[in-house]
Image (cartoon, rainbow, N blue to C red):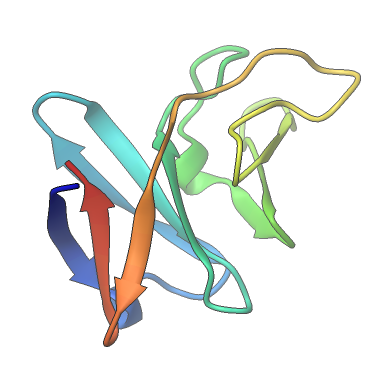
Amino acid sequence: MNWKLICKLEDIPQLGSRVVHWPERGKVAVFRTAEDEVFAMHDKCPHKGGPLSQGIVHGKRVTCPLHGWNLELATGQAVAPDVGGCKTFEVKVENGEVFMAA
């Protein structure tokens, strides 16, 4: 698998995100948990298109800033009772650098 370097882990705030502009994928939000786990998904809530990168990260979920939908970072799926989901992308961290599958 091809991997593309997207940033350093320290460039993503804990319990926060960073937006990566990828021509083939559009805007991708890259999230970092309190435990330094990293996840990536489209930066668009399935409900009304809110910018997930501006949401609140808690545990392994993000809450959309517009209407409070919660999405699982690992799967991109909305937490019940909400339904729907976002496309996720495979990421890995090596030596303090974050890579996304190309």
